[in-house]
Length: 552
Image (cartoon, rainbow, N blue to C red):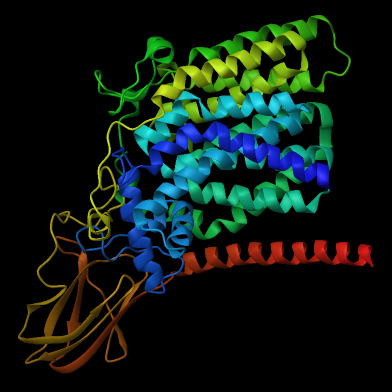
């Protein structure tokens, strides 16, 4: 027990040490501009408002989109902001909460990549080599300091956590603890970044095939259980996001033209470091894989060929390494324009940026590097390659500049936090550009509105009308909104310029109440997630009971 504790403490210290250079820039006062990072702060502040309004799960933003609201968290991945809220409740500001989420993703990814690689290749050196390479893959640094993608950064931490659980299940297929942990982590990944979850599912398939060729049918059930449990727990998010996509602009207009973002050989090998969008020829961010990582592929290829030539008897590692290598080649093809037909396939067609495949190349190449630790010569070569990657890319572990806009800038920001208003409901003909003068107004009839209370998921007010009137609530309609007048549900009309809610109100005094709640589809999805959570509690309880009786 003591040796085990010392071992894990050692890994923690190692993970923190190699992470420090990537963490230091986040300790600077204020924040630094990235493509998405500051929007993450605005979204966290908005989720805080939604939770404060007892809207759970958060789906509809009442404050963003210039106060007109829109279904942000019905489609945008929520898990990073759940983490951010926990940190905020510990006393951190919204800005620092987001920075802490980025920071903790770094050593956690190093720690679990060490464990995953060591567990797969049965070698401590494998863990060291893989974790260093994983942290200093160029695209990882792009995510941290250029793109500022909080979802992708957390996904980088979850990938090796899932692989670690699955590597344990390969040797112990009936281990309920690892099945449940793997399922929970897979759910977290879906809730963290849906595109990353799609691509990682392909990586899981590669990992499964490599192990299935050795273990055969033993590993089928554990992998299936992990996947099903992950989909169940995250159903409250992905089911509405998938089936309600037809309600928003994203179903009609892609965020970007995929053809602009395919990679050339030159970009893959020689592209310079920059902080702009990749189409910026002067300052666009790099697409490069990096020479140290190409070195891993080169050495791995010769090691694999040597292994088959020598007809190694215990070849299960060789088979897995070969599968990973083939998987890397397959992913690499997706970076180039030649892969256009593949990107038109279902689900993949939803991904607009081919370069996001670099995330999976980072994972697979770093993992494959661990295989090189089994031979003396390649072990020292791979250690040298890992050190070279650290030396070459450490200078890029910094932002372009720092800014300190103050906490109020983010809490009061009312933008959409989307690049192309892609989450705007289709019935909105004119997109808001400023906050409306009145949250509630009479557009037909005469009278007054009093005692207005407006929250993200509720609105109430009193109306004193001289005649039958039409009242407009300047909140964009989305399924789930219900409005009652004197306790009687009213038909909501939203066939107007801004797609906001109009209701008919009779002459006299009336009490109007509006509430955003779950539709039948969302409620069914919530029940599936709760069922998954209940199943986990039951199985974890069973594990604890078994351990308790064994001790007795």
